[in-house]
Amino acid sequence: MANPTAAMLVIGDEILSGRTRDANMHFLAGELTKQGIDLKEVRIVSDDAPAIEAAVKALSQAHDHVFTSGGIGPTHDDITADCIARAFDAAIDIRADARALLEAHYKNSGLELNPARLRMARIPDGATLIDNPVSTAPGFTIANVHVMAGVPSVFQAMVASVLPGLTGGSPLLSQTLRVHRGEGDIAGPLAALAADFPDLAIGSYPFQINGAFGANIVVRGTDGAQVDAAVTRLAKEFEL
Amino acid sequence: MANPTAAMLVIGDEILSGRTRDANMHFLAGELTKQGIDLKEVRIVSDDAPAIEAAVKALSQAHDHVFTSGGIGPTHDDITADCIARAFDAAIDIRADARALLEAHYKNSGLELNPARLRMARIPDGATLIDNPVSTAPGFTIANVHVMAGVPSVFQAMVASVLPGLTGGSPLLSQTLRVHRGEGDIAGPLAALAADFPDLAIGSYPFQINGAFGANIVVRGTDGAQVDAAVTRLAKEFEL
Image (cartoon, rainbow over all chains, first blue to last red; front, side, top):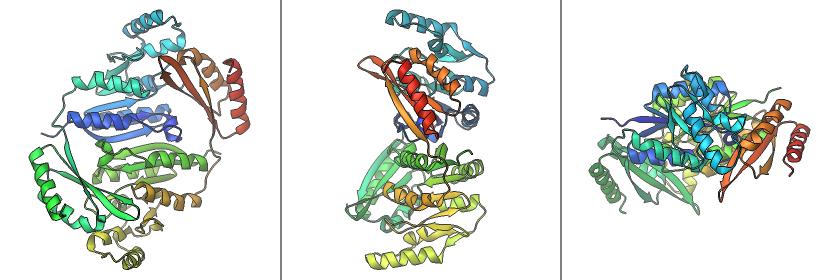
């Protein structure tokens, strides 16, 4: 049976302007691979309501799971929760369960639960809260969309809350061979190997070091014996 | 006048599986910002023909420029050029101009121009070649889509070939204020500032260091005097 598929939506002007380098995508990709959920597509859009809504709808329809990152804090540019509510025609307001979490947290911290912070309790009707052990303000799951914070420590904690509850597939196994030849010399044998192992994904990632060409050949699949057999054959062909 | 808009399409299973962390997006984002071209959207798709075709069509219609990265090498998983030709209903075959470049290069290098390497001369009819000073095999531009290699050194060289020929807009200027208060405390003043400076984009990016909360406030715009005025007002309000 094919593995479940996933998409990620990253929301943030700061990544598109080149100010910040996204870290959440790489983290999520690794976690999903371990769980046997195939990340098929990532989109990064700006803090723009129509762009967020359209992307959420398209990705939610096309994949089993969607993970979003960013735009759920207390400031005026945090519009993700409202956009996702609109995408699912769900009402959204400050919700009692989320408000109670924030009240307890800010009471302990001595900080004021002002209107800006209360915005973080805006949760669409019908959504389930995602636990945030780092800074309390929750994420949420609505339909097949998991809405999480952009701050990497919080994002990672939320992923750890969500993933164990999802049905995974067969974890993708991979082995890498490093070959010190140009891709043009190894392309023929690789194509033949790919034809003989249709269930494996065989990728070639070239590099150049001190003027010498080489490639990392990555063999991926869910059947460890097949991955082993393909890598053994390659190592023999390339006399490694 | 509004700046031209751009999108990027990254093609590669290796990024979606978490094996590799993409570097080209961050580089391109910075270069486009300097040139006054607004990067509005990035999509990352796997080495899958229908996914590549659909994404190229959608992005090409929605934006002034599209930049692609990855999938134009000599191996069986390099399918980008053929997908882009199909997206534009263009014929594609080994083209004489690209073949001549490769012949000269491989003659000098003593390596064989075998069928795998010749695949890198597959260029759609009507496309313009993009110079590759690093490893010769060219990229190409068709309609508003610039098709470039995924290897970062080659990608960067191709961007340097393409960008000077594009009409830019007003470069986006930005200033950052680092504030050692929680986002919830600064959200009110930021929203008021955003309302008073509708031409500026004001973002807040929280951080947490040793348990203390803070935020980087980034003010962006094309009018330097406005950016200055907004940052000066913020610094005063937050007594920095």
